[in-house]
Length: 133
Image (cartoon, rainbow, N blue to C red; front, top):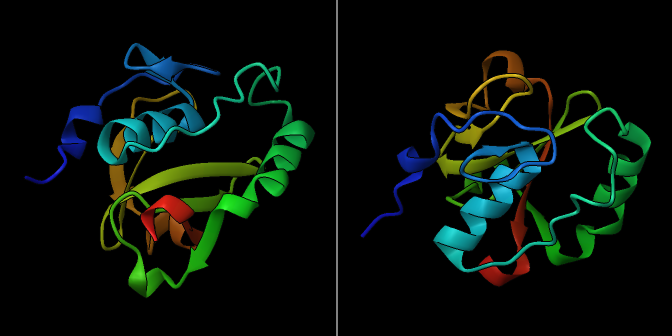
């Protein structure tokens, strides 16, 4: 049975949110990987003051890449991470080729393309957690 990514569409954005009541982009990605792939990622909710804490967030991303391996966009599959340069960083979860589930700041979670449109130029890379390799 396929994982029901649609269940996570419409979750409101909440700075440092980590559950179905509200999530930031990392909180949503963390929730999806736990529910759909049994991978428990660190919360980091207490590690930064909010999405405006850009320097700390950049450091967290740089420091946690050891568990992740970059894959070509053409090989992206469900549960991979889409890392984007966007204020300065944003993440989404691949749901199927070319589409990601993410929660933009100030909006509800949505499935959108990551290979074209406004996100196509922002993608820094696609990453797969070592537990999915």
